[in-house]
Amino acid sequence: MCGATAGGPDASTIKPGETTIQGSVTRNGEPVTGYVRLLDSTGEFTAEVPTSATGQFRFYAAEGTWTLRALVPGATADRTVVAQKGGLAEVAIAV
Image 1: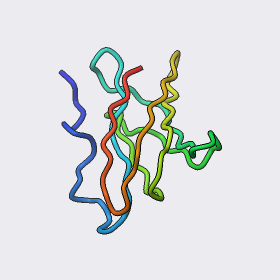
Image 2 (image 1 turned 45 degrees about the vertical axis):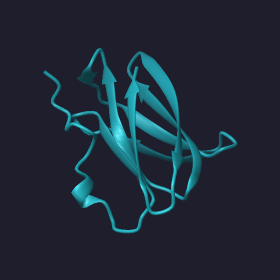
Image 3 (image 1 turned 90 degrees about the horizontal axis):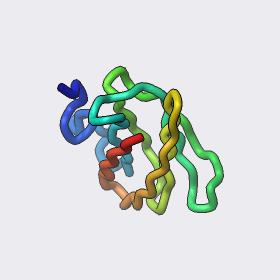
């Protein structure tokens, strides 16, 4: 059984008014630890965070189109996300 919180990290801890991108990284339906990179619309590195023990991550970012790159042992995966100003973008990344 997956130990990750359904829908990603607890949304109640999000900073009010912040543009937030969050989610989880899984392999075969199970959470996996590693890193998630935030790349801007030109592919430039912006930020990187480690995933939690349950594969979860969160970024506070500007509105726009971003690429999330999950880096876990033996695999990588990219996902594109559009962040709305002051909104929450939930992203599930399967590697």
